[in-house]
Length: 467
Image 1 (cartoon, rainbow, N blue to C red):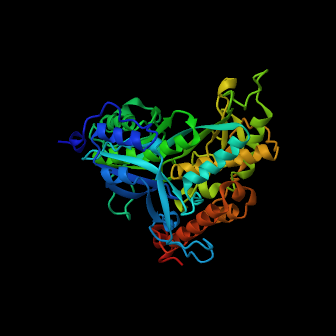
Image 2: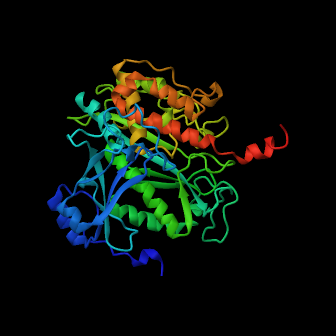
Image 3: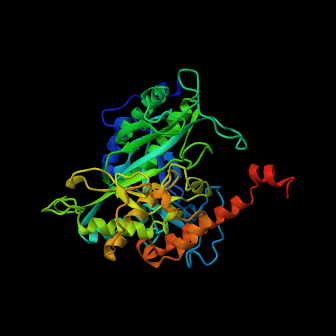
């Protein structure tokens, strides 16, 4: 019997959309929920939190965690807090309150379980500035103050790989239903996707039960590399969906004895994985796309300034869009990834692509973020760059219609270089929050130092007996 067959069948309404504690109690009763996973996304996009019985959660839906949870590195370590958090001690508790709109079942759990994403607050009621959800809210609030609403649509690339329990060995493509792994690249192949039909059936079922709106699934150019597109919508809601989808595909894959990975460059000879972000701005009252002139339908000045902001600030936000040392293995010539800040119409070699569309759907696709980026922070940073372009009335370069990567690499090539640029940018710190910028920079510096303590196989192969 497969693990998934032990789970409860879908209830009459197991999608999210609950408004308050009373509705949550009724929803949990209908679903027969026994436990609640109370989650927050940390700086890496990892789900942290507590699991509690549903009765306790409904009686006291708020909980506390140490502030240090937002300073934890991907290795589980903590940086030196000296001079970083000011008067607030790193072990001071912060209080988490559920966003009931995110309440959903955990469809892979053996017992009836629900999950809900929380927001973090200081004891005096202030939002915790280091929280990725709050960082995105700050940016969205800046748009709302102008009467604007950003609309986003993420595209996520990931690899399916054979289980790998020894990190010293390279990753391998998994075996599909044919009994054979892929040996060549099968971009857009239907049959290559069908190799993993059972896995993707589970993925779709799990996604539907959580209210995740998957638009399309395709096979990308890498061996066993896939791409999932989500429907466009509210920035925070879409970041929540990416956060939950990553958990979903990992769980579905493990039930089929393989891994799903969002590493930016998991295999040396294969293309990297990206998280492309489509972005537009609409008028809050009318819903009109502000990237298009209402009379002529032509691109508006706001559209061009948004692009110019991205061009100016893409190098500065690379620490967020490419947050690990592995991320920069994707930023290389002939890697298939854009390595520039050029923009162009339907030009996938540009870091910024304008897809073909009518005036009502005019948008900009940011193709720089890697799939390992925290979705809340990547969306926030990209929208912040565009916002600053509008605020500063910037003008973009001319659109590029050739291979833009031939213009050279115009992005930082290392994590440490990116972090220095990010920490030194005052306009971004004001928009994203100075506490967040300080926390993020310190965490990334600590992760880099941890990486530098690891000796790679390349060093042993080429330096051991030759230098």
